[in-house]
Image (tube, rainbow, N blue to C red):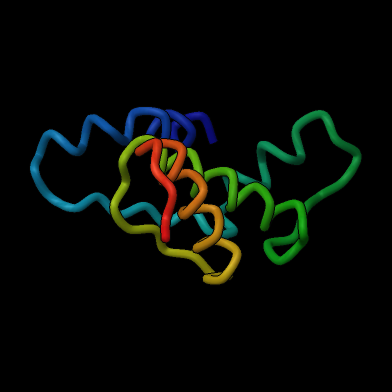
Length: 94
């Protein structure tokens, strides 16, 4: 989990390669590990908490400049990307 969190945190470093950067955090084990730490519950890949964790990872990756995200729930991820991208670029979409 720690390595995955660090990769997202430093995703902007990959932009220096001059190529599109893709991240696929959707429902991944690292999200379930983070959520399960110090909790009495195990999280299944399709639980609402894991979806929220996926959206958080997508938003964080967008804020770091990632170009493409691979997700299961396209509609909610698209909304998260639009908001994060608007914050990052300080602009509103028309």
